[in-house]
Image 1 (cartoon, rainbow, N blue to C red):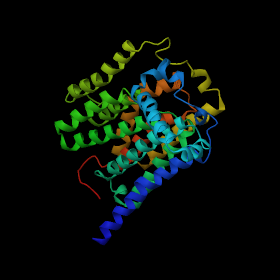
Image 2 (image 1 turned 90 degrees about the horizontal axis):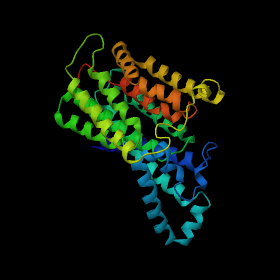
Image 3 (image 1 turned 45 degrees about the horizontal axis):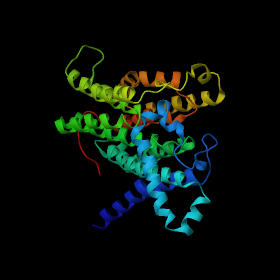
Image 4 (image 1 turned 60 degrees about the horizontal axis):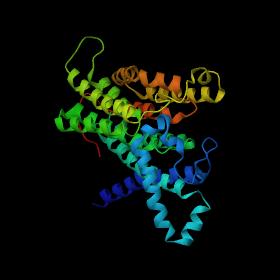
Length: 330
């Protein structure tokens, strides 16, 4: 009983408190030189124009949590004075939302790493080292603080968990939850499409024509396209596809090239942790994720390394998982 209690305490310290402290230091220990969010008094207008207007759920939370937080703090003048010394109330509210979903993402990572781990990852020390690395990568890429990326990571990891459960159990409930999750998370960010890529990597045999899971994939594609196209229709923007084309800058700017190398080396590191079967799954995942990767190259900015985080997290998940047999390791 005492050992079980110690394990629970260690899980709370490692999975919840330590990641929160890392994010806290990132938001308040040093300031981003990329986005001056700390000085924003309210949600800026660009959040409701161009491609940012389609981040419906994050924008809604940014506005309303900020209003609620401001109303609460106004009742404590001393606290308000202290908080304003370290950023605007809007900045603090964004941190509250991001830290909430960040801690939940850490919990999901822990659950995923415990779900049928490979022989190498059965050692709790190994799992915790990789967990720490994954959490640290999310934190360090917050030098581009946004109101949507951490929320998108949470939904994406939730989708990975349901996909793995469906892979082992073949329960319709897990698939329906995955379907609903993709539907909802498309209102957060287009990262939701990567859940389809992960599902296809596990269930599609690219060496021969196999339509066994074609119906499931069609349903998941529909779960993404319906809200995606609906948002484009109901929230028309002058630049609804992207802010601009950055292909040349991505391959000429030293900052953007360093961001690209960060993503490539990170994926290579995870690739070296994989067994032969895991490498095949990771290759398929990257193949099915190629539209997302190409979009990063054309209309994203490599220096915003947060864009590579879903790919890196998935590579760690694949490297940690045993796909041949099922068991739970505590």
